[in-house]
Image (cartoon, rainbow over all chains, first blue to last red; front, side):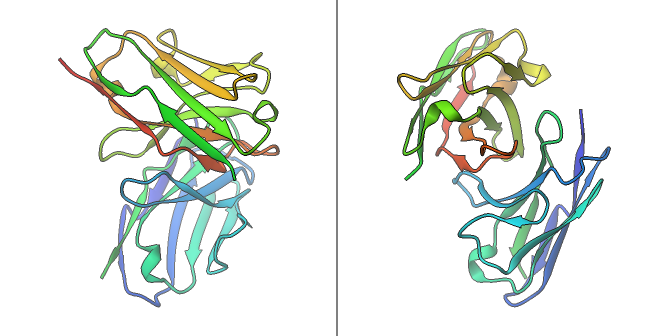
Length: 106
Length: 119
């Protein structure tokens, strides 16, 4: 199985901050990576697919980059609605998720 | 509007069985791979199983192989998960999720149904 490692596990930030979350794969997954946002009690929401493609309806302050084994999700200017937990997921083989990054209010 | 609505969760004793259902609407169900993804309380996401459009291919995470069975009924726009020999570690919210036509990620999710395995 391909292991996905996210860092940090928790991130404290303020509204307006630029935020970066990293996801590393245990082997190359090309660009087969997605990012999700999840709020408490809700289902995950797709933000980014194929490493850098923005899902329809997702604000442009979200962006993804990377390929191979190292990927990043960047929020250019954190908004109040962005405080949530973020997960990466690889789909080069059977799907596996990272452990999550909780973005908290500083 | 794409909608996925899960049902069938509840409290079950260890060793028991449960069948989850997912009713799909707003899209051509028979054209998409479908999956079950679960989330234990306070934990991360774990893909459980998926099934091809016509049901001819099914895949499972190792921890549920031989105990869970995924199936679908395209005439009823429904996805199912038969769960047998349930264990405490199967306690989770189970989500039904759709994969887009050109990828293995998940573009639509249901609201989830809680399965609790406890005596």
